[in-house]
Image (cartoon, rainbow, N blue to C red; front, side):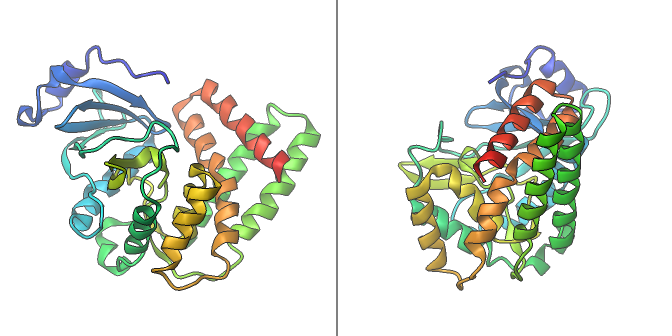
Amino acid sequence: MTLPPVEGLAERLRWAGWDCDLGDPEAFQALDRGFGSDVYGIPGAVVLRLARTASSHAGHAREQVLLPLLDGALPARVPAPVWSAPAGPDFPHGALALTWLAGATPAGPEPAPDPSDIGGFMAELHRVEPGALAVAGLPGPDAIDARRRADAGLALRVAEDRWAPARVDALATWLDRTLAVARSDQFEPVLRHGDLWWANLRVQDGRLSGVVDWENAGVGDPAEDLATQMYFGAKPYSEILAAYLAERPDDPGLERRACALFALRELMGIRLCVEADDMVELESELDALWRTVLSA
C-alpha cells in the first residue's frame, strides 16, 4: 500500500481554517490511499479524508448530511462529520474530517466479526425508512443502475485501448449478461451502504463496533450490501446471509443478484482509477476484471 504524503498537510489545513480543538494539525499520520480519498488520522481523535476525485467529493457532501441522521439509529456506530473544506487550491476536491471510531479495522477477511453482528447490522440498515433521508439527496435505484451501466461502458472503452478484440468481445458479452442478472428481479429499495466490505468495518473483541466510509450510500438493492460479504469467504458469507434472512423477509432473487453485483465490483474501481489518473492501479483492476470474466 502506498501511503499519501504528510509533508505540507498541516500548513494546508491551517490555510483552510482547520479547527485546532479537533487536534494538532502536525499530529496527523498517513493511514491509507484509497481509490477515492487519501486518508489521514490522529488516532483516537479524528480521521481526515482528502477526496481524490470529483465523485468522491460529491460522496463526502452526502455523508455530511446522512451520517447525523443515522447517529444512534443502527446497532454499530457511524462516524460524525466534524469539519470540512470546500474544493479549492489547498484541497482540489475538498476535505472531510470525521470522528475516530474505537476498535480496529481488520487487516483482512480473517478474523471476521461475529457473522450475526454483520447480518443484524444490514437488516437494521435496510429497515431505515428511505423517505426520512430525502434531505441527503441519495441516488435511487435508477441512478445507481445508470451509474453501473456507465461504468461498464467506461470499462469497455478502457479495455479496447489495451486488449485484443477477442478479449474485448468476451468482456462485452459477460457484461451484458451480468448486468441483466443484477436487475433481473423486483426488489424493495432500501438504504444500503454500497461498499460494506471488511475494510470499512471497525471491530472490538470480535464484535462489530462501527461502520465507516458512507460516500457510496444510496437507496437501492439490498443485495449490494450482501454481495460484499463474499470477501469474507464462503463459510462466513453463508452465516451472515442466514443471520440477515432471519430478520428480513425472504427475497427469492437476493443471492443471485448478490453474486452478479459482486462480480461487477471492479467496474467502480476502474472508474475511480480513471478519475484519479492512477494508471498503475487501473491495470490491476483490469486484470481482476478479466479473471472474473474467465471464472464465469
